[in-house]
Amino acid sequence: MTTIEPVPVLEPQRQRRSFADGLRNALPKIVLAPSFAVILVFVYGFILWTVYLSFTTSRILPVYKWGGFDAYFRLWSQPNWYVAMQNLAIFGVLYIGICIILGLGIAILMDQRIRAEGLLRPIFLYPMALSFVVTGTAWKWFLNPGLGLENTMHNLGWTSFKFDWLVNPKMAIYTVVIAGVWQASGFVMAMFLAGLRGIDGEIIKAAQIDGASTVSIYRRIIIPLLRPVFLSAFIVLAHMAIKSYDLVIALTGGGPGNATELPSTFMYSYTFTRNQMNVGSASAVMMLMGITAIIVPYLYSELRERKQ
Amino acid sequence: MSATQETVSAGGARTARYFIYAALIILALVYLLPLYVMLSTSLKSLDEIRGGDMLALPRDPSVAAWVRAWGEACIGVSCVGIKGYFWNSIKMVVPAVLISTLLGALNGYVLTKWRFPGHKLMFGMMLFACFIPFQAVLIPMARVLGTFGLSNSTTGLVIVHVIYGLGFTTLFFRNYYEAFPDELVKAAMIDGAGFFRIFWRILLPSSGPIIVVTIIYQFTNIWNDFLFGVSFSSGTSSPMTVALNNLVASSTGVKEYNVDMAAAVFAALPTLFVYVVAGRYFVRGLMAGAVKG
Image (cartoon, rainbow over all chains, first blue to last red; front, side, top):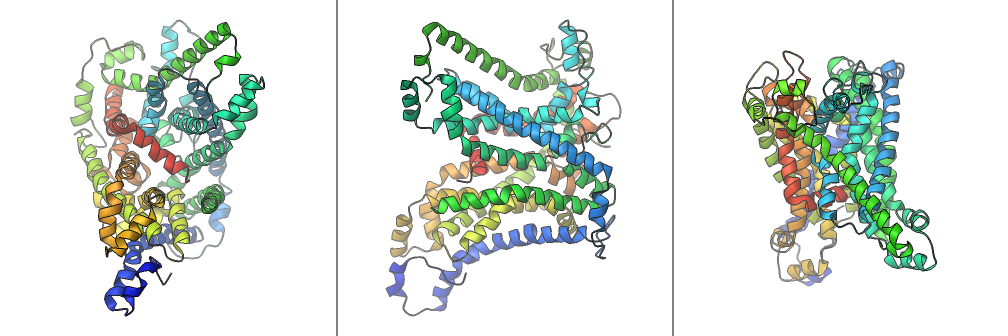
């Protein structure tokens, strides 16, 4: 990246290259350089720093004494880490799956020439504007075992209704799924709706003339055409699932006990409160590897497609 | 592509439409329920909350809980409400959004109109930076902020949000300027306009929509951030989201659900307001962040 190639048209005017010309040519790079340098240092440099820390014996503060793979062995022998991985699997699969099914379902309903679409769409989407902490706080109250949903059902006459998922270690992770789906499914709906609106109406008309039923038009033609949207939704949701931190903290605090531990909460507590910084770093490296495995192939294919 | 009625008999079509509307209305109510419960709880007294039903309208609506949440509620040891934290968030969000948007615009301009060998790799690296789990940079960032005396300061959080927002703002502007006709830029060059002049006079005046999208996206993200806030600030320097969590999670004294909910409403208000006023741009930002095309 040494030369700029702006406009060949200018060439005749620039036979003698002076210092001012050089400066003018370098200006775009000078403008971009600080941002790029910041990204290099604070993203890539810091990632390397974290990777290095995961190979040290750091406990409460970073120390730079080589510890080999010790932190990784310790990480993978922590029952807590397995709880976090298992929870991420449960949360990830349900969160992504339900968001996509619900989002597609609502989008299809919304696409039936609905009269009040302009009114309904913002209702499904507004949770996305809220902070995860607000969402967690609201749902924590909504699902409160004493005063929330359970109490409401009792008041409605369903006295045997029991809903203690927030305080039940076996079920608590599912409350995180519920709140997460509430927040993100409207966004997935918007993605599918945009996809549906982009489908060529002629194809569908042709199928209708051939006598295909509505259900089979959706199943055979429309949904297969939405494949790119499925992929985008999956990427976005998977990425959000792995990073999910605030929602769990606000909703369950990782509890009861460690019942809703996720890799993100594991990383935070081992690093900042349990004084095992090397193990915390190792878990951060694991999270980074997970996200990289999802994002890099996607970005690569997206950037390549744009070229064509 | 929604014309489905033709294939179904008239009666069946009407039933189907009733079903569609019923399903959509029920779903909409479910999505609205948590917001309704949050609002109505914040307007009730504690007695009414304990004795009544979560779904019932407030019998005697009062903003007492809002007043308490704003100016009296205890967060940690200080009982001065959330107002200070609310202002912390404002002081953090405004400069962070403005700086990251401006830098993103300049970066996008360079990456589309002043290309040089390697621009693609550079953009790819900035793009990937959008998606890293912040856990992977948390410890070094804490060390660096500490070294420069910026821990527990709004300035520190502004810097952090500008840095980790750069990827997205660059992405937004790059994709927007990519579609901007090169001919206009070239014509201006022939007329002798320089780098900044072209940006200022030609690109910027037609960047209105993308500026709005970027500002809204950044505003929402930074206002709603919790991880950086909780990691790099403490006590009275915390942003709103961290204060809300501390308020709700505190287990001392009587649990004032109405005050918790009022505080949550305060934390939600700015982003909800933006969403109501400029929802279209909000959605566009989300989409641009999701589908890189």
